[in-house]
Image 1 (cartoon, rainbow, N blue to C red):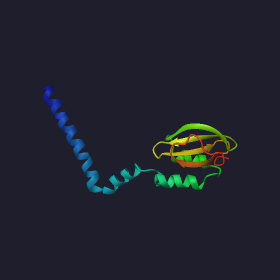
Image 2: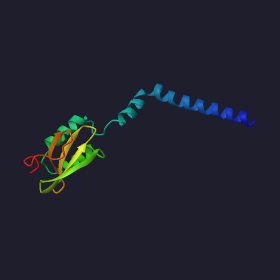
Image 3: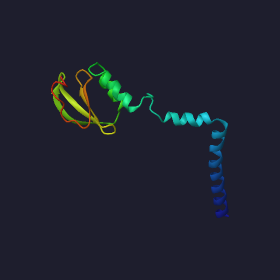
Length: 126
């Protein structure tokens, strides 16, 4: 009796899971596409467009905020060097192979280069 009940329960659950997905796809395919669109980046920008925006706003106040927003959790500090208004932190984005020089005193990006750069030239980070 227990085996028949567990078998019947398993078949019922499998049937419900199978049937559950069908109405969503047949009734409104846009709902399925909307959930896939939510998986994309909220800004709607490509990675290169984000890097270009950071470069465009280089030296302007709030550039660091933009960098943190675009690459949240993807930046690793490589080195600290004199520059800006004291010290500059070189932050590396492994996913895109780009290094950003960030001055926390004024919350600005002072330099951007492709590759893993541990030290920028002094004239780039002043």
